Image (cartoon, helix red, strand yellow):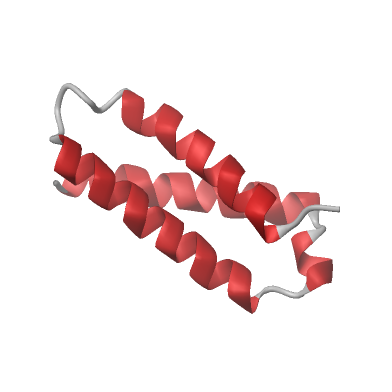
Length: 78
């Protein structure tokens, strides 16, 4: 059973991988802000999902893709 903490941990791991590639072009403060915005968004969305929705692998994959795409957008905007 997937729980919210597991999803947040996975999102944090994926964000760390994504943001590692941007360390040369963005400040640590910008990277930290992007990660905090992404995790905040993740928690907001997770709070609105039902248990059944949390168990959907397809929905999870789509959600993770969306979070990473938003983080990339924020990286390019800074």
